[in-house]
Length: 122
Image 1 (cartoon, rainbow, N blue to C red):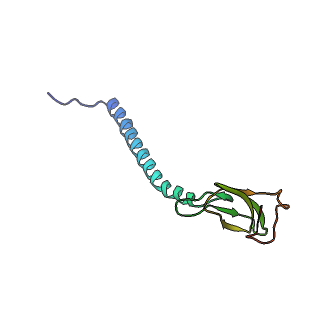
Image 2 (image 1 turned 180 degrees about the horizontal axis):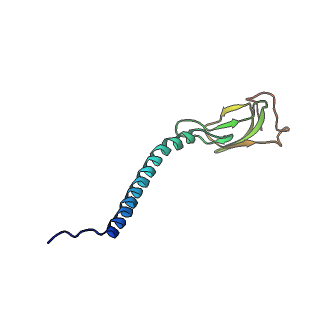
Image 3 (image 1 turned 30 degrees about the vertical axis):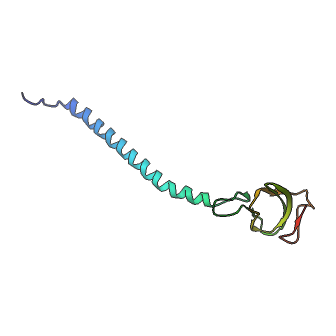
């Protein structure tokens, strides 16, 4: 039995199939590389936190991030099994109580602005 000779039409059909397989393999490799590069980037953005309330983690306490650079403001802090209170915070990060469950800017408390970060009120 002799091997069959490929006609010009058969050769034309095999080239696109090879090209298709190469395209699929390239796509799979590109996707794998993209996911391996994206994982560290998403981990880095998880560390960066936004303005306002930031919940604590297993390694640090909850904090309030005041993003304005020229004001001190009153925030209301809620705590688990203890009462809520107000606290004056300045620009940047203010670490809160270990049992803090929330904090937000309170524009209705004494006009929203304060003079001395660290001051507290009811």
